[in-house]
Each structure stands twice: as C-alpha cells, then as structure tokens.
Length: 417
Image (tube, rainbow, N blue to C red; front, side, top):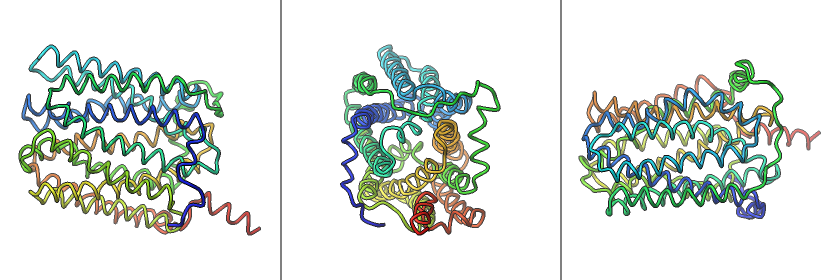
C-alpha cells in the first residue's frame, strides 16, 4: 500500500456526501441492532437451526426477483430519492417488528413476512446506494470516499450488534423501538441532501435494457471474476447466520455475547478500512483481493473448530478484515470500469452477487448445519471458501495477476505518452 497524499477525512467537506454518510451509518446501525434481536428471538422461540437459515431466505427471495429491475430504476430516476424511500420502507419494517413483539405472539411466520418486505426495500436500495457514491464527490476524491464510506459503515456494524445485544436485556421491544428512532433520523438526513447530478438513462423499461448490466459484466472478465469470487466464497463461508446457535450451544454466552460476536467482523473490517483510507491499495491489487478471501476462509475454519469465546472473537475479527480488503478492491474495479449511464444496472448485478453470498449463504449455512451439525457446517464452509479461492485464481488469471487498477493503469500510460 502507498500513503495517500491527502487526509482521508477531507472528503467530508462535500456536504451531500457528509449527509448521505450520516444517513447510511444510522440506517445501518438500526438494521444491525434489529438483526441481533431477530436472530436471538427466533431461535429462542423455536430452537430450530433451519429457522435461522429462513431469516436469510426471506430477505433474499424478493431481493433476487426485484434487483435487476431496481438497477434500471436507479439509472432512470434520482438515486437520492430512491435511497430515502427505501429507508422509509425499512422504518416501516422496524415498526412492524415492534408491533409483533408487543403482541407477544409465539409464532415466527410474521417475522418472515416482515423480512420479505425488508428484502424488497433492500433490492431497490442497494444499486442506488452503490451507484450514487461516485456522483457525490469529484473523481479525485472517489477512492477516499469509498474507503471512508466502508469504514463508517463497519463502525455501524460494530456498534449495532453490541447495542442490540445490550438493549435486548430489556427485551426485543426496546431494540426495535430504538432502531425505529434511528431510522426516522436517517430518513430526515437523506431528504436534506440535494439531488446529485447523474447521467440518466433514456432507454424505456424492457428486458433488453434491464439486462444491460448483466451483459456488461459478462463482457468484462475482470469484473465478472471479482464479483463471482465474492459470491461463491462468502456463499459457502456464511457462518454469521449460525452465530445465535454457536453463542448459545457451543460458546455458552447470552445475547450480550452474541452482540459481541456479531460486532467482531465489523470491527475487523472497520480497522482495515480506516487503514485503506490513508494507505489505499495501488499495487498488486489482485493478490490483495485473493489474499483477503483466503484469510476469510481460513478464519471461518478456525471459528468452527474452537469452543473458546476469545478465539472465536479473534477469528471473526480477522474474517472482517479479509472481507474488507476483497470488498474494497471489487468496488473500485466495478465503479471505475462502468459508464455512469448503466452504473445502476451494473450495481444491481453486483448486488445480486452480494445478496446471494450473504442472505442465500445464510440459508445454505442453516441447511448445512441441519445436515452436518453446527460446527462441522462452519468448518465445511470455510474449507469450501479456500477451495473457491484457489480455483478462481486459475479460472481468472488476469485478475489474480493484476498489478494496478485498470483506471490507474490507463492514467499512468497517458502520462507516459
């Protein structure tokens, strides 16, 4: 890594970016608090590992159906407005969860219905969120904005589960009430941002235009390799869905311990992203990305092999750091290589890969745990991630051997000419 010539926080001088960042942090904080409460509450009600997997599936199924059309929406309409609307929908989900706990029902299917609505909101929010960042700051500040956005996001991922676990001491109602209050503020902040200028697609809505992002990704081996590596690596290594069961049955800690376990990956990612804000990766980018994924897989194996709470925290911390390196490289690759007029649709394709690796990975982990047992499923997932890392280095040699980002390579060639 090379030292950045400017302060990593200087990008906050851009008002739109600062307001957007604050809204995103508060929204993420609220969602992370909710996830801890949902996971613990569902497992406490049913004691069923499959239900932990269904939490992910309930969010992923509508996400998969809507994400490509959502990318087209992000290219035709103002992305700031889309994000504000989706934060409002997440607020509605929080209020519905609050109502569910107040009724004292002993069934869980209403939770899955609420999470389905959350998945719909997330489908429209993700491509808009990924595509809007490049419109918020000048090109020379984009890499710092990516790193700072990632670091503050992971700070919220750190604090959210911890606060959720601590507040759960007073019951899930308290968690959902606090999360809803944070979402109210997030919606307000997002509405205070000005509409960021963007290249608007004039294509009418059709399957041809909706699939433009997919065609672009398939035509770029570097982009396809980066996205698919994350998809399959995290798909098999999605052990976070099983943390409520690991906390209760293997590590023997309560909701507060679960909050710390869910916090650890975010802490590792946040520390890593802060370092990236000041020391961005500029050389051997392919090696950095594959190394990050390999670290993620190895630490997943460690997580499934230990009964020590401290060692489990360390494994999750390093998993977050490895994942952050991979996310950083992939995000820069995708955004630098994509024209603005199709950036929403390409971001939608990227969101499919991310959503599949996260929510579908949670479902896969729940099903595998039901078949193989809890700890064996986690170890199997980590080993599969390592296998995918080795295979992708062979299938996409242009990616594994990449030295500079293509954007930086073109700039260097232009200066040399």
